[in-house]
Structures are given as structure tokens and as C-alpha cells.
Length: 174
Image (cartoon, rainbow, N blue to C red; front, side, top):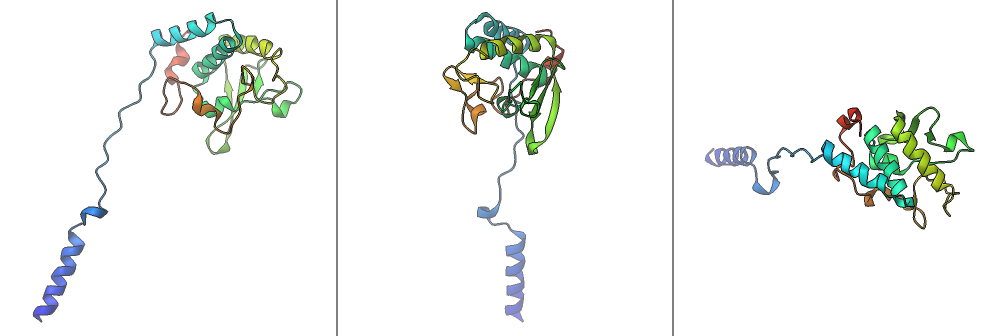
């Protein structure tokens, strides 16, 4: 009888007291990511638009798309451009929309504003003279297409955590 009681208390002790190796540390709340404020956004757009090189015109269009849409880096980096094939073209400047493929391979249509349309139009004109203009990807590097399955990971952005600009910038007249 004494032995049974000891066994029962041992079982109770092991069930009630957690083993330190199996417990998880407490979850601490994450601090919100830093975002660019209006003066910083204006400076970023100004620097990109002042650069009249191929890379500057491309970067101005990229920044404008990020500001207008709030889309993720992967969504923007995977845009395709082929004006002769409607199914393979994700950019429609006449209707002021772009088609992005988001998380879960969900396709969505995103509107863009007039300044973004102008920036994209400028980029598409210089892209037409580029040596890699036959590539299906919208964004080209200096020596050809920006390649790789994780093209967007190397792009610098305001928020490296998820690659988004703050959605409230949509109301700014940057």
C-alpha cells in the first residue's frame, strides 16, 4: 500500500511539474516595423526621379508602384510585360491597373495612379531600347533581366520585414 501511494505521487509530480527542457520561453510582443515618413518618401522619390539613367527611371517606376499599391516585393518583382499577349501582360496603362500574383497564388487587380502611370510609361519607353527587352519580366537589370526565383530578396525596401511601404502613403501626393 505504501509503495502504491509513492508511485501515484511520483506520477502526479511528473504530470504537474513541467520539465525545463520541454517548456517554451514566453512569447514577447514584436515591435512594429519602422516605416518611412512623408519627408523621407518625398526624398526617395526625388532622388529616383532626378536620375535620368536607365536604372533611375526603372527605380522611379518601382518606387511609385510600391507607394501606390502597397504590394509585396515578390508581387512587384514577378510582373510580366508583353504588349502583344494579353494573358502574359500584367501591366495595363490604359485601364490604370496591374495584375499581381499574391500569397497562395491568388491573382488580384491593383489600381495605379496618374504619376505611377507616367513613371511606368517612361520606364517602358527606355525598356524598349534595352538589350533584354524581349524578356517576359517587366523589370530589367543593367545587363539583362533580373533573374532568379527570389529576385525580390535583393531589392532594398523601406521595411525589410515584409517589403511593404505603409498603406497610408496612398493618400499622400508624393
